[in-house]
Amino acid sequence: MTPYDVSDDVIEVVRSPSPSPVAGVYRVFGETLRGLKTTFARIVEGPVTIQYPEEKTPVYPRFRGRHKLHRFEDTGLEKCVGCSLCAAACPADCIRVVAAENTPENRVSAGERYAAVYEINLSRCIFCGYCEVACPFDAITMGHDYEMSDYTRSDLIFTKEMLLAEAIERTPLRREGE
Amino acid sequence: MMAFADVNYFEPWWVQIVKSIAIFAVIFAILPVLIVYERKLLGRFQGRYGPNRVGPFGLMQPLAEIVKFAMKEPFRTTTSVGFLFRLAPVISIITAVGALAIIPWGDVQHIFGQQVGLYGIDVSIGPLYVFALAGISFYGIMLGGWASGSKYSFLGSMRGAAQLISYEVSQGLSLVGVLITAQTLSLTGIVHAQEGMWFFIPQFAGFLVFLVASFAETNRAPFDLIEADAELVAGYFTEYGGTPFVAYLFAEYANMIVVSGMAATIFFGGWLLPFGLHPPGWVDPFVVLAKILLIFTFFVWIRATLPRLRYDQLMSFGWKILLPLATLNLLVTAIIVAA
Image (tube, rainbow over all chains, first blue to last red):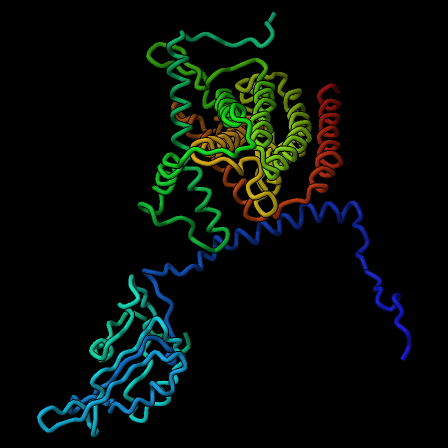
């Protein structure tokens, strides 16, 4: 191995030649005019800002927003059977499920059991979508809502009724090719 | 024989008071509009909207901000020099308002059988009056930065001192070409001398030098090293808040109106219109105002375009390019006029 030579690391910096008077004038005025043209083109283009509370960025179909719980459309029974697989899959440990037996008088879900308590603490949720993947009955899916700010932490614990309720359509969906 | 600094006092005292109040009120009503206009325009230049939340189209923004500034607690650093710290913004605003007096908004009119010149004063020293006030206004920046007792303010004011002095020379020299062409120092006289052709055509080099030097004199981008926010926080007014800060802000914009008004008067024919249009006298102030607004728009355009100069570039540009250019322009004009 050759000993370290400092001069190996010295790089010759190539500098552009200093401009001639004509090129200097061009750089002062010509390039300035080019810059003025560039900024003026922005006025012609118009602003690109999205005026957020009034206009919303459309989300993609696979966007992972606030969760939704689903019912069977024909029978109206809940799809969730209270298996707690979502709670087991949740890396943030934000889902709490308490299961109860279905009875003939009180049939809530299609399976043997149902979720008596189903809570998602959205202040802890990281919106990874593992619950959706883990669910064997497609009972929980990720919706499109992303506006979930609230004043107190306890307001962010969503109960089963809130998750089952039809979400207010607040988020525009991105159309094909948008 | 005209006396030195002769002022054409053909109006009674009360007309002059009414005039000065009118000019002051109109300009100070325009300043907040100018500020919001600049911010909206700057936004458009950068592909965004600018302020549009307060009131219709965000027009109430300056009002909200003035309320905010007025409610602020007055404070100063323990190292500051109290008296000068309070005095400095006052110097800035007084000189800025004083310089407003000289912009001619129109010719002498006959209102109710009374001769009224549509300008604050028509001094026979013209631009020298503005330069004198600009020379004093630099104390506002200098003392404000120094009396703040903070290093950023001090650095800003030191830069300001060097910059304002350097560019004042070129600014002054660039006007001399016009003055010897017009053979007068009175601004109304200069406007009358432009009835054939506006001076920005024969004096184009002088106009360019004046424009560039004006950017530097009003601390506008790309010469805003005095308040270079990337390096100096806010430069000379770093330690100012509340109403003294507003005083500096208004002084800056009033100075911009003065400089735009000077450019409009000296190079763009003041209240004259091209294509042989001769509107009635009451239109004149609006013509001048429109020209001032156009030049102000150009100020904003430049601000949106050019990055800030390095300090040594600023100095070498001022002394090695602008000053020789202004001198050359003066020499050529003098030779042509004399020949």
